[in-house]
Length: 423
Image 1: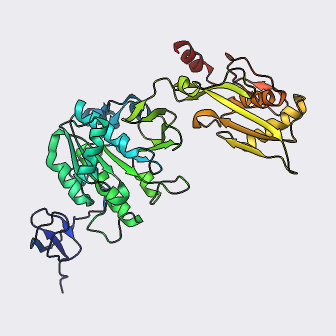
Image 2 (image 1 turned 30 degrees about the horizontal axis):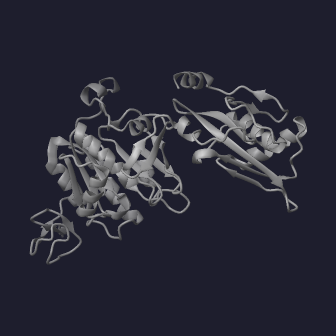
Image 3 (image 1 turned 135 degrees about the vertical axis):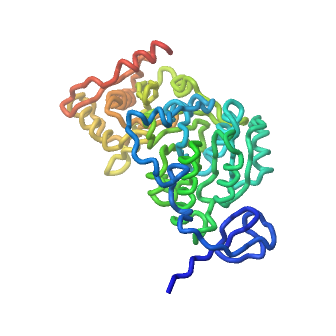
């Protein structure tokens, strides 16, 4: 006996697929438009399609001819710090995931990126599942970014977002979805934000990006331990993963790439949160050293290389008499295990006896220094605080310290020297 074809419920007005029959369409809110239709065998809304045909009917392509058939061109978004981290701009058909803690400014950054793209490149669809159109408009007026080609959509249905993007056609330059955890697919069970819904939603958005050669930017939430919420598969599926970091008590914001299929993951973008949005910091070294006290013991300047950008950072140390049996080693921005090793070297080879002291080390500006080239700066800052003798103000210290007390040369010193000469 032949098997009956599967049945699905679809709205005849907006063509949205529903889990069952409804009097009112949950997508376009029209009444009496839900109908039973036979599901086609190739209707797989949870699958990723890499081309409009979706079947690879053209067969394999020689790699030498791939650029001629589909050249990969970058589009600058207009914000230099974002373009730097991306490796030169947005790649057509790429999917970018931007994560960060709540309140750090992810939505503000995405709205500013969308406005720049709409002003310089083409139409941008900004789809929000967290704010109404009025709220987005109010924030855009505060930021001073209201270009005509920036289209705003308040929708939590991924089918509606994809359908709105397809209607724009060739004029579409980018799609921004804020956030991936609030969007769901009506063709899959589960609440928005669970593992199955995130997989289904991301699959449809990735399929749209690849088949139409349109970049898609997804905003993601993070958990308490700083990991992106949802299945780890999401990070594997996308092309670029950006981390937007910062301290709520400081105005500095840092943009890093933890995954980038089209560029380096070592670049760093620096922003400052102001009353009118995020502003780029073109010279981060000047900002990090602006409030450095003069003639103060326990302060040392070192250089760190973030991709192609050299940064001058201040390492601060404070030693105090320990009141307990075990002295404390408190570090912010520095590896505490590395500090314990440097304290032992300082005691054995430097004849600075401070192992019985509480040691506090901090990298000013909320930056992190985990490279061995910062060893000498940490060691000198500790020694300066213990001996209460300040270091020269114009001194920049770079070097790795070994267990036998030797100072090893740091790698990649040429870009640091060139950056200081330009500065």
